[in-house]
Length: 265
Image (cartoon, rainbow, N blue to C red):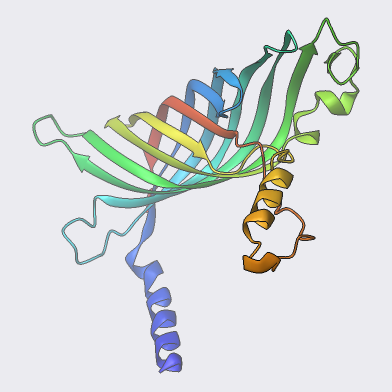
């Protein structure tokens, strides 16, 4: 049975090139608000940026009434992501502030639905699209500054552009370089011109920070694991489970303008 299913899947793959083809290619330029979503830091957006090229792949020979409307899209984008952040330590009379300005190479794999608006002249379309992205950090700049007048320790008073090294100012010496995200958006096409509004949401936390509460949670769990008559049902020497205290991920809302041309066959 497994051999039959394998042969059937292979036969379907062989048929795909005959039933689909590249139909359009284009370029797109976008700007918008980019920020890092993190519950512990107050954040404000920076100007996000995206420029890239793409190709559309359509299943034109499907025996399906929607074959001319469904498409796949992939390409390469150069994107700018980041945020401004601020953190106030009331008890210490201290303030921390800074920003991330990061540049990525991004590969999206988008599934879309394009529909020609019947009430308007030919060449007017609306489309919806959704799909995953993979991004690799190219370069970036990090500024992190904290001032604590009542405490002279270097850990409470620093500035990556004054007291730090070159590595302290480089984003991807301190942040994760790889990100996986999701793009969700809507668009309008007038002849060869495209206009899109989309959300780009990352899933991977930008950095890894030890959770200072993990040992306390482990101690509490061990205490709760003590059975009756003083019998311990858990191993008190168990190391606390590693968990990331930093939850910030890349997020952006972008407006993009592009130009699309058909691929002549």
